[in-house]
Image (cartoon, rainbow, N blue to C red; front, side, top):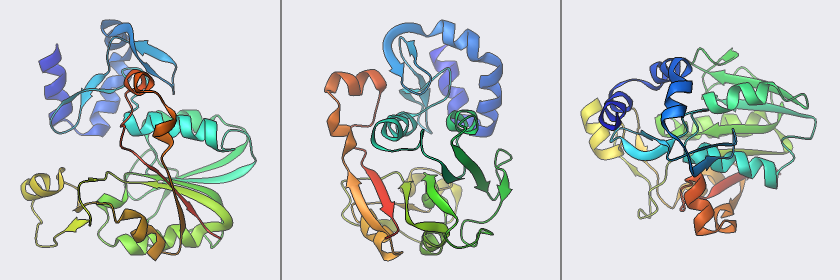
Length: 254
């Protein structure tokens, strides 16, 4: 079973995995039943999570709601450190993730708009580099693991800044290699094989380093680097399967 699951997550697109999971969610959840790990987004416990990623890394994907490490940490952050679940706010979610979509749409306190250029899950089809929304439209913007796919990163960031209301905030996360002082980019790397080799994934265009906050500030944001992960014990980090190095980047429009 383990090898079959690794092969599937290694070779099938996430869109296909989502469709398969909707059909097989119950039997897979039963197979993984236990109490070693817990997903805070769906409150389900398992003996371990499913493997995920281009190398089939183990213990990552919730069998029930499909959260990964970043989704689980963000969910708890929104619950504990923000007014996301209580305030009357306009929210823009770029490239909406399956684990969040249905949950956020059920929230009565938010006017929830999803946007993407290609995803069939999104309400609005628009290019993050040239969005159709008016200036100062949204109180909150969520943009999780999108920028590494975008060639004109600064153009996208300035669009996020433009559509955010003054006084609003955005959470803009990307995968970061904290061993790198500066983000690694090379526009001559264009094939899928090369991009996977140098950037970690065939559709990634760079590897972000510790200079990521400066790139956010360049677009106009006031950035707070929240080391929220430090509020958890080692045991909690292991139970929720968080990334112990992840920093939450709160991007404010002052």
